[in-house]
View (cartoon, rainbow, N blue to C red):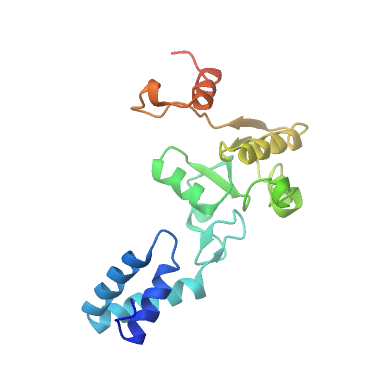
Length: 199
């Protein structure tokens, strides 16, 4: 990298700070940007600055949005009686890509992790509880991760909602579609067996 001019070295260093981008990939990206037109480079730079200036959290679900409310919360065709609780905006996007859920979301901003100092007060649990009741939510679907922290978060939320007039469910976990049983870990197989359903 030391053979490049200073401006290219700085670009490579900046790009290599992105997650999943090592020095070699950053070098290839820098050369690609250099080969593109000035207009393309300016458009890329503008889109990066624009994201930093415009993106904020939705006032209702805490997803990423350009406006006070995100597109999902503004969509009146969504089922407002269903509320899916996820840890991060990326989890909501993954569920949306599946096209399987037509309700609303609530993003916690993480999961309970006492060993790392993350307790109930560090998540958007108070905001979740405030959404239950006055907004006509009939079912809360807990779609937190299947890690120990995700499971603990789901159990904690279920406990907090136990005295509310709302159905609480947990997304299923287990063998992926097309998965070969001999390659599936024991915990995943246990979850699949525990969550079996009639056909």
